[in-house]
Length: 175
Image (cartoon, rainbow, N blue to C red; front, side, top):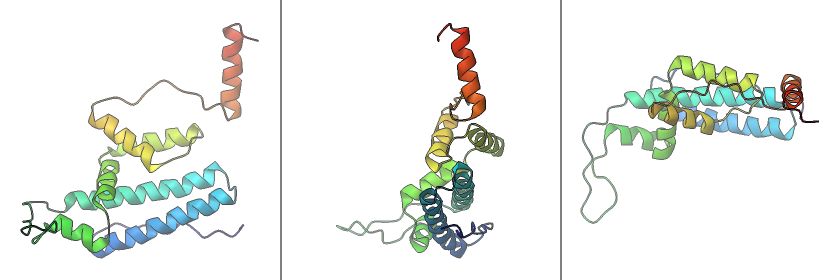
């Protein structure tokens, strides 16, 4: 498993067809992430794939945020199906994207560019695994008006953090 496939190129999403293609590319990225995990490729490779996946979800969320949602479709009597779905619902159905997935993508897209870049670099610098779930938690914190924690938290895995933990133990008088 040394010759793993390359991360697919992700372009800007400008049409509903691009959105459907994005869904397929995300499936490829997830499969690639699993391959790297099974091949023990290391955190750096896993994070490269995860970052590409998160950026792709962000692009999808940006596109979906621009799709009009005016009006609500009318329900057929005694049926759960919409007789006249909104454009947004039509786009989701056409691309095969569940509403919860679309909402998550839009949460990731709602993170300001600066905060997004800072969070990605911070996670990589701290030797932490990148994930969509982490970015969604960040988006929710930012939406509530909470600040990013500024206190540096050591990961304990790298040599710098191990030295920091040893020095802290010495200062606190622990053996």
